[in-house]
Image (tube, rainbow, N blue to C red):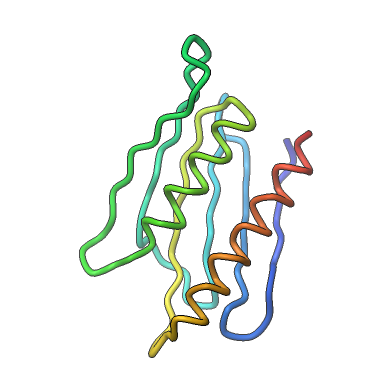
Length: 118
């Protein structure tokens, strides 16, 4: 797989998703203009049970676990591959509307990535 990169949204809520192969799996980064490691999620697809399982580690004081967990589940389930998601999105004085827009922009980026792989 060649490297994949997409930016969705504009302004403060723009999200970048970058993905690259790593052995038999994938590493996916989700970030904004302030990239950092806020949460890491590992997704694994169980072919016998036909389900995805995700483990998440969140850094103290960060709330990036929602982005990491959802993305790891969606990507590992759809592509049936092991994935590592690194999520780091930070906005000072973030509003509820901006949180919702970041979640939507992330979902749009994830779907674009998945569509590029099918």
